[in-house]
Image (tube, rainbow, N blue to C red; front, side, top):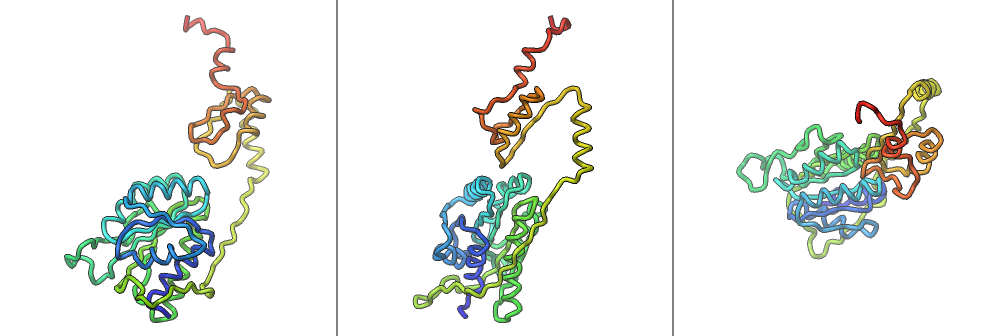
Length: 275
């Protein structure tokens, strides 16, 4: 087994679990991750020098596709530059797999350049943070790495979706030697998550319907949304004479006919108090 085979297999696990877009930022400590993703035939990589921009681009791609996007950086303050996008992704429930290369623990706080405390660096703004082992000789450790990468990807896709952090301490050598060929193991463990179907109970529907029927004034306000609700909301709006207000990021079709709050205001009787 190649020295960095468990790192190479991270890319294989990602590909098998439908992560096909990876944002890469420059750095030597993350070289093994970068090479593994770049050479993988099923993964498309994007090289972006600025970590802050890179993380926001990855967040936008994940928002559009609904699938987890991986973002990779080297050790040190580079990881902190991901933070603004990570925070937004957490509260917008956008799936990201954050892979930060790191120094081994014995080098932390030893005046070594680009060495900071990276474990749980994003605090409460990720669903979970993992710290991978730095030694790969034992088969149990290899299994732990595979298990935790699977768990991280599954967690990013579990509702509510969100960012998950994997800190990856790596010792030198960072690069394969000239004769070494990267092989992606076909025997990596893949752990699939079986998601339960969420169904609103009849009692809950009855309660919602009762509130709807008893309300004299109704307004439908649509916030950020990944589904196309234009047709169904148009029918509700027309049938029940209910105005629909859509945020600019609601994905509502502007060409769909809605009763707007402006129409309701103009059709209402003049208020003598306002004259």
